Length: 188
Image 1 (cartoon, helix red, strand yellow):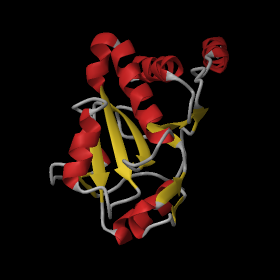
Image 2: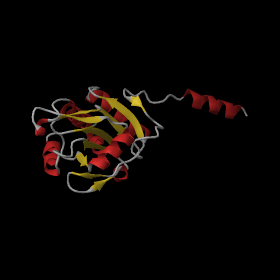
Image 3: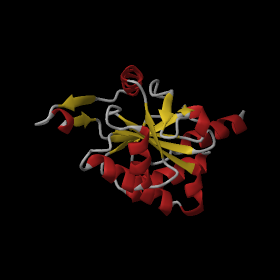
Image 4: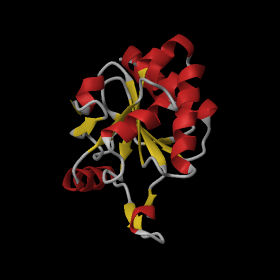
């Protein structure tokens, strides 16, 4: 009996990882997607089992948030050293009208060649955005083709089992992201 009590107390003393991002462990949304990558292959979360996944919604003509986020993701991958091979970056476009597969290929090559860009039909995008609780809206410009897209500016982080774990705010930095990714790798 005493050993059971001691074991119970020891379990209570174990601390949860101290993430810099918002811990979403156990969240009941953003569970999966079915979207096509820049190479024409339909992808879902199960394709990346065994890897950490950082997923971000944006668009290629975004002037600041999207390139900054993808740059920080590439830097975090580099900071992980050999463990960087266990990280998959995914960019989901909220502008499939302009973000064709060719545009997405060229855009992703600016950050890290192994990162994937996903796109879907307007209906697929709307359903995915709803499931991920992501906001996006087309904002008219001076000409029909010069519009911009307002959109949520955070990333979702999945563990190696494909479970949603973290919500990383825009501008948190590569060091903070790499630290959180290391904690997830240690726990896997």
